[in-house]
Each structure stands twice: as structure tokens, then as C-alpha cells.
Amino acid sequence: MTTSPILVTGGTGTLGGHVVPLLRSCGHDVRILTRHPSTDGVDHVAGDLLTGEGVEAAVAGAATVLHLAGGPKRDDEATRTLVRAASRAGVRHLVYISVVGADRVPLAWMRTKLESERAVAESGIPWTALRAAQFHDLALTMVEKMAKLPVFPVPGGLRLQPVDSREVAARLAELTLGAPSGLVPDLVGPHLYDLAALARPYLRHSGRRRPMLPVRIPGKAGRAYRVGANLSPVGAGAEVGKRTWEEFLAERLG
Image 1 (cartoon, rainbow, N blue to C red):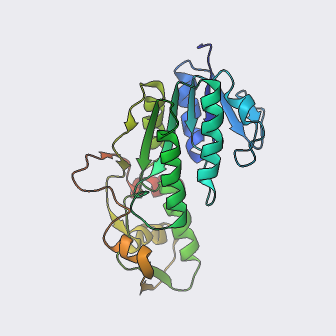
Image 2 (image 1 turned 45 degrees about the horizontal axis):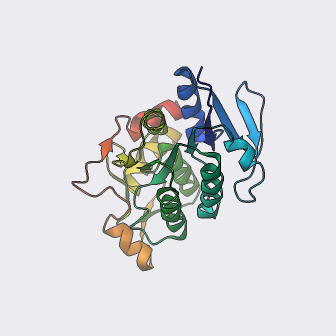
């Protein structure tokens, strides 16, 4: 085992649940910063990135920090709290997971992702950042909610390239154990879908029928989605996952 643990924020979430076992299987000690510690055999430190409580203790002695924790609001504040503590603790590699389109889609939560990227890049700590497309898990949550409506809304021009969270986890583990690399190529799924194409296999699996209703996303965000600002730019050299939405659904829904 290495003497210096890898600190993982958000280690109990969807992505963390895949990354932490990968890091441990490579022989590394892992410490998880979480608001709700558990006793699953992994070192947990109670802390809150928004209040700063417990963060200094969590980063103490860690040479590498993998920052996965995120939410719908104040991600940038949480990241700045982590960066300050990591800088004081002498962390030598800070790894961050962001989202494709963070620099191009004018939504508040995307702006917090971009500001988090900037906080990491300007921290003075050697860093790596990966932008990933929406996970299959998130696409499923979205489709499930819309399928509860009597009519399934299909926002015109909205396209997604969902990627499997296990493939993102594998890439992050590789990056975390490698040398700091700055902003690396995006990671996206193998196929592009509009919302109707995502919905149809889900509706088939769940035995539901729903009429599709085209709707228009208003404002700047709508325009951004219609020109594909949430997609990895063509020619940018994105890495492409292998597991498709249909394969994910077949496994998840049986």
C-alpha cells in the first residue's frame, strides 16, 4: 500500500462508487470526504465543502485529490474551499471531473463547473481536468421523470451523447494515478440521441406508450443546445466510450 492516501470527494456517489474500488484494486489507500461517513472498510472523513468543516483534516497527508463532489448549486464555492485546503496541505495532484460544454452553455450550473475548472487551474497545484458527457444514469433519471407525464415532451434541437459512468470512472482512475495533464480530451458516449430516441427504448422496456410533443427551449440556453454547445466540438479529439444507451437500459431494466 502507498503511504499517502488518495482523497476522493464525492466518493459515495454514482461515479465515486465505481472509482474508489478501482483505485483500491491498484493498491492505493483511499480516503473519502463525505458529509455522511459509513463503515464500509474505506477511510471516511466527515466534512462539508460548503462550510469548510473537516476539509483541512481530510486533505492532510494526501498527495493526490480526486474531486468528484458536485451538486446543482455552489459547486464553485465548494471547489475553492477544497483548493485552498489542498494548497496549504501541499497536495501534488488535483484531479477534477467537469462536464462537456461547461464553457459554452449559458446555464447557471454550467457556469459553476467552469468556475470550478478555473479554480483548479489557477490553484498553483499540478492538475488534471476531464469533461464528460451526461452519464447514462442521469439520462435515465430525466427520461423516467418525463415518462410520468401523459405526453412526453421532446425539446427541439436538444441532443445528448450519454456516456457510461463506469467508463468515466476507469478514465478518471487512470488520470488520477498518472501525471498531471491539464485539460484532457472530453469523454463522450458512442452515439448521439435526441430525447425521442432516448425515450423510445425506455418506453419499450417499461411497457409504456406516450405521445411525443415537440417543445422549444427558450432563450440563450435553447439557442446553445440547438447549435450543439453541449456536445464535444467536432475535431477536438474526444475519447469515445463503448457502452451504448441501449445496452445500459437492457442491464438496468432487465
